[in-house]
Length: 412
Length: 148
Image 1: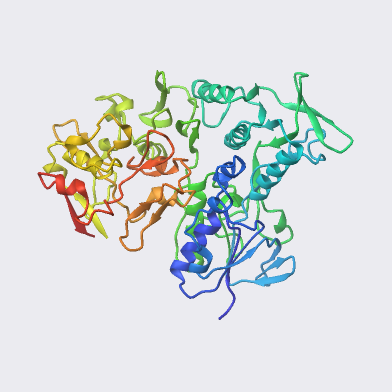
Image 2: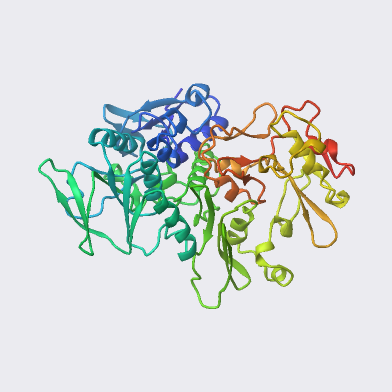
């Protein structure tokens, strides 16, 4: 029957690829492998930590996916290297040959080079289920009352939210002067900061950690900030960025940059090896990782599909019932921009327009019917004609309405 | 797959489709728009009629797209392709309320519900044998079901 199609990684990109491979190759052998013993949606890890969902509740494909799709899955199997010439993956217990290989190993978190952080036993990241499980154990074991979090991006605030739900107090240090700095401006950030503070969080903005106090058991008991303040804590969480997980590729000869280098067909420098998701340093966000996985799978089956929908400066946020959409620039990046804002008690909206095109949008509060904004921004649609007739805040898909012969909506 | 086809030129903006949608998805066990609580946000309509600014109306109805951007962006598995009907189904128990689907639908159709714990999305009235309630309620045949 020949060698299987092999996918390393069961995250967004890997699973989307597996589903597409099975669709295109009903009879092919498909072998997946993952460090984690359970496939899970990383975007829902905080729901596990907060006690809202069990491990099973983090699975994001249809029930019994592997059995139904006849896909073999090496749970908890670590890839140690890739041998492109021999067309095989080096595993802990031998070699796994492949017909085509997809590397979808995601990313790993970094621990900042703060004294004590890289050597202490109670410093955690938050990326894999095992991270959440370790943190869960630490909360119980240490009867944790107070946790120090580095970074107030989406991951940092997800962790903070989960810990607060469990009655653990958190202090969050953020180098930027506002929370969620990639998605917000001063106004939209303040709304989230206030909600978290109401729930018991403390923020230290524009301030970094610079040192730590470590006890005889090699545990951090307090973190020192750059302003001299000392924050006692039971453990530390680092949520200050990730990098592609490609250390295991050393010596493989595959071309890497920040991530694995791929062409527009998601193919690496080896014609039989593809890569998708965070490991390529291209995606940054779930929907794009899935797209890349599906496109890689199609090309592994001999199709010629290009990854063109690359725009990824976009996100949605939902904390304490306050929802937000943020796409593109959060502040105007160039002179000559028009900035439209409007605000009321429970909503804030901001649109940045330059040269007749939308460059950025933030909607906080009601985000109904807002999907068209991403289309306008990533395709740089000229809206100057529309703006002559109505407020930018009254735009909607209706302004671009159209249908094809099968009744699907299209843009003109 | 069956799709609710739209002829905007026939729509006169009566919004009977919206009322029918609200009535069809209510959870208080009653039927009939005359008994519908319009103030209850739980009774939100899954479709919408938008004024085109030129005296006409634009029906906004989920297309159950051939390449559904909502489903393709779902990080919980809540949005799925129903094998039998071909429609894009939604399992609110699995939904993580991240609203990636709201952001990713280029046509702005799905929306968060008022509790911000799930989305409001067309289910083609799957439990209604006669088909979608909106279509039955349209007096102008501006929306109609067709096999595509």
